[in-house]
Image (cartoon, rainbow, N blue to C red; front, side):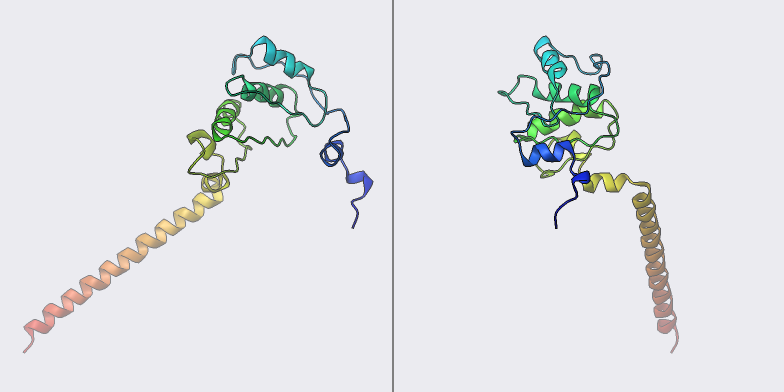
Length: 171
């Protein structure tokens, strides 16, 4: 089954055929330098972004996560979905720390929870679901149920002890 042309976005076209240079749908907002400082090279990269599929690469410590943060925070439409891939867990953590400062609660991190950093761990599906109000409500009910169950076990135990004492007293 072929996808209708009306559903094929420029990004999808670019992913399927990376040689296509399709323009991105960017909104130019003020850089959030007070949240994450940016140097001249990073600023040049951010202001030079124009395609719907971009690749940021460089050696460790060159500011890739800062550059990606500023692209997301100042260029990407606020309701848009963004996919960032990293080969190093330290890069995932660095970007999660920066994005967290902008209250990006809709952030979702995929990775081995034992290998990613503390900030990134907050955004894996397991942790996010624990914070969901419905999950918290269910967990509260489960705690109430467990407490009630323990109360009943204690009550039964007390009754059995009482009955044992009565049996010992009766000839």
